[in-house]
Image (cartoon, rainbow, N blue to C red; front, side, top):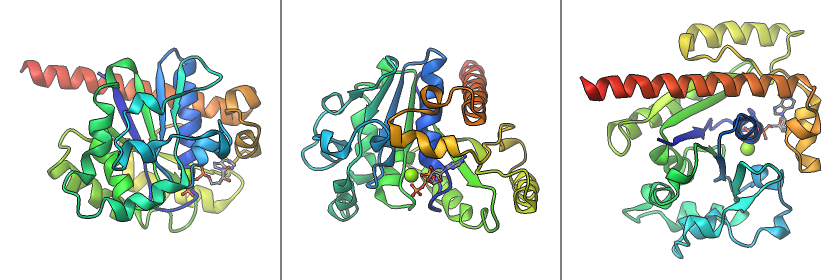
Length: 266
Ligand SMILES: Nc1ncnc2c1ncn2[C@@H]1O[C@H](COP(=O)(O)OP(=O)(O)OP(=O)(O)O)[C@@H](O)[C@H]1O
Ligand SMILES: [Mg+2]
């Protein structure tokens, strides 16, 4: 079964895209065939691989009324196991266009169904909002991964995300699970980071990944060179941390599979 991991937090600038790109790349490095899906109109995940001018078809065509098949938008990357479904500014129009369409929340799920078996992992990057694009990502996902910035007020706002998560579990996607919470932009020299780490740990407990992503300028620079951290700065702390996070992700996904099989057998 393919793990479809949606990266979401409606707070902006918390490291969703940095995590989506580098987690997807780390999974590919581990030999997992991975599809990175950019559902954010800002298209930051896409721009880390292609210039906007090189993107003619995108997730807009897949989710909008033309309903282009997903395979028509899948692009290769420099890593033979990593593929990209690009986003584009036009995606912003879908918030309006899909309003009132009864199948609106299911468009991504429907689009993924025919290609799902071709990938081990799918990673979905979402915009900083809980609108129809993020809802599509949560309806299609097997797992939710929440990046939280080590900063004051970081936890505020996760309430709304977790409420949306519970509503999606209640009806369209009862199988959805929280894979984990990852602390991002951690700076061990500051008390803010230490305080918020303690606070996040007390709220989320076991759900929190052991790996923290520290502040590292290489992670900020690599997209400008159309590289992931693993080709841009393979010896950087950012590369080591995202590799470690990928290890935890694979472990949790596999444990989850064993648990689900045991439930099915019972
Ligand atoms: N660990 C890190 N160290 C240094 N800079 C980082 C790190 N993680 C993210 N950044 C930088 O912080 C900014 C915000 O990160 P990112 O774009 O990943 O957040 P986001 O949650 O996707 O934002 P948005 O909500 O706008 O989509 C970017 O400039 C990114 O390069
Ligand atoms: Mg982003």
